[in-house]
Image (tube, rainbow, N blue to C red; front, side, top):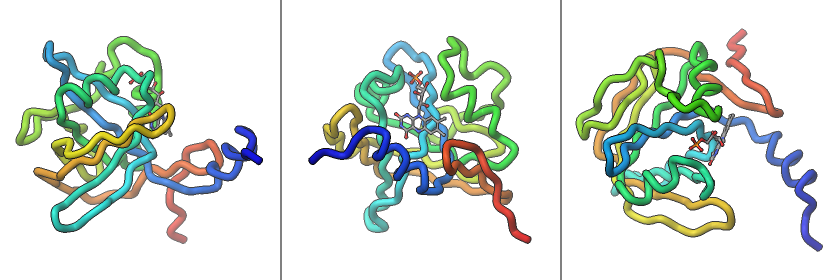
Length: 159
Ligand SMILES: Cc1cc2nc3c(=O)[nH]c(=O)nc-3n(C[C@H](O)[C@H](O)[C@H](O)COP(=O)(O)O)c2cc1C
């Protein structure tokens, strides 16, 4: 018996995660960005991470064709950036502070950490693709994380 979509969503909403923005640049030089919580470390040697991207998302073709992406781990003050990159706005990068990374990918300034990755494998997985990327550069900053739990943004309560 297959699980219903309501049961599936309700169970998964109880998994607390961080929030990332995955950026890429397509063949015409256009920048793409998408809010992603399906991010995971995979391997230390070589350093691999994965992101799961919906096939219908505008970023999907850009990642698949360019073979490169960045992952920006958002800080607690960056909820508006998460909302922007989860929206249908045409210019998602408007007013978002970015800086070029070592490979030229746009990195989001103020993120807790930014990774630049080269796609090593793209795995077909239902309505998503799993992109496994080798981390070519990684930089981190201080700060508290932006969290997502039960369908809402949260921040760490360190008290
Ligand atoms: C907190 C949060 C987490 C999300 N995680 C993912 C994810 O892991 N993978 C994904 O494909 N979409 C995810 N989404 C949805 C995309 O951000 C959303 O569909 C976005 O509008 C796609 O943009 P695009 O079509 O311009 O690429 C998430 C949205 C939110 C708000």
